[in-house]
Image 1 (cartoon, helix red, strand yellow):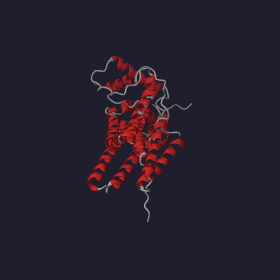
Image 2: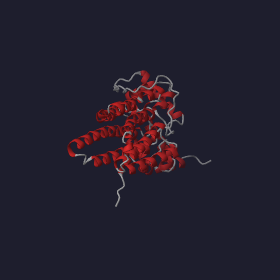
Image 3: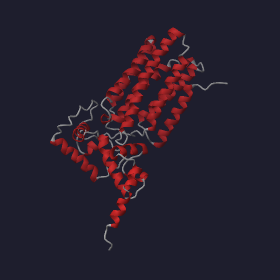
Image 4: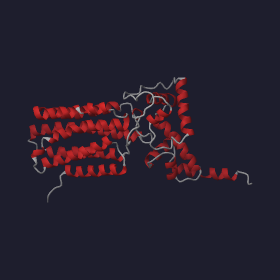
Length: 352
């Protein structure tokens, strides 16, 4: 019975994921391109390894060299800042160097490609070392899950480099008997990572009209929660007033960068002020007010699902997690415990 190659299966799943993103209008252009290149790379691997089309062998290292820089561009555009043309030009250096190695020094590829994957993976982990507030373009409703997905993808880049090293060792010491198993495991893990990224609703195109300073990539310094300045207290007060006097908090696509623009301050300044004054991150600060909106709606008799959407949450898991963090109860439990409040308030009104 003929077997179905794992790379072909991975390519089919990635193609379906890409069609889903395009059809729904979700995902940045670089995330879509990353998924497309990964699908093509899987098909090339299947053609070479399982169907003996050795003429395509030279394409494998070049297509592989595109994946780390595309992952970085998707990460920057989806979570950090708008991309400038120079950002894209800089990322062309990696595949250009690999192409040079393919033509003039093919023996170096076994070292160059793992170093490339490891370097980009470590670069992403370094950019995320201080948590979700370092991702100003990530939606505040679910910045923690987004952070976990980006971290997973960075770790998988490093894991892919490790698999390349294992394949070389397998060829040297075990005549390549384990190569197929190593490749299958690696393809499955990368498919898992890209699948998680695709399931998270990414920013379509970040707003390039930034106010004030550009959002820096470097980490927000550790906040001194004991001594916030008067300016920081005033800024946090302005942020809270903005949330309470507008429908901004109810927008599920609200980001740190957008909130900072409305306050005409750099995102780093706003993040540090909230950390010091409230001793929480920006996502927790905004979601605390969203939970208050949901509580009002639940008290008025609105269903849990309607209250979730009215408050700016898009997924039930995020809503339940944040609601329990703020109130200590589930939305349903809170509504049941406070069910009589609206009736008591209504019955106390004089009849005219």
